[in-house]
Amino acid sequence: MDRSNRGDDARAISDVETTIECRPIGVVRTPFETLEDAPRQGIESDARGEIVLDDQYAPGLEGLTAGDRVAVVWFADRADRETLRVRDGTRGVFATRSPMRPNPIGISPCRIERVDPPRVVVRGVDALDGTPVLDLKIGLE
Image 1 (tube, rainbow, N blue to C red):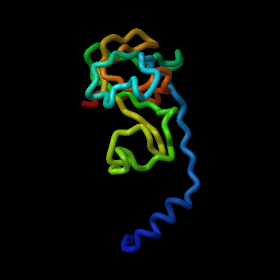
Image 2 (image 1 turned 30 degrees about the horizontal axis):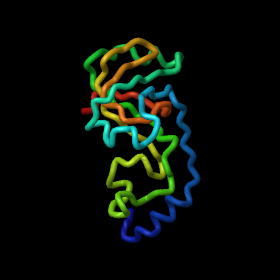
Image 3 (image 1 turned 90 degrees about the vertical axis):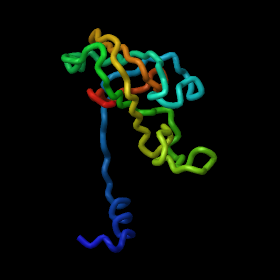
Image 4 (image 1 turned 90 degrees about the horizontal axis):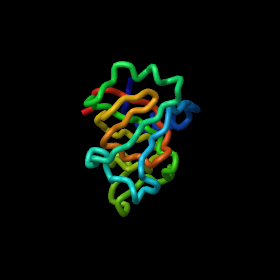
């Protein structure tokens, strides 16, 4: 496939009408009510939080144990989806971990402290209280 005309690729992508549907599997419980309250980066945080899954997803926790590293994948439902430049306009959102982006999906690398289905207590979470959880993925360092 000839990729010499990148403009055609951009038009093709923008012409595609695709909807991707994700259903939250639970919510994050943290003490963070506002962006100002939350740690700037989960990897820089020792913040404790709780992932509360809907009961139907609790069997998916089988095999997770205290000490495991897990990526908490969440949807930043309160983020500005129109912002494309951050840090006083000096960086594009794709060059940052800012939650403000067209598809505000966040990932917090966490360490599990306790699994008590349908709840998982973790360290390192940086999401706001009540944030929808999309997935948990084991082993992200």
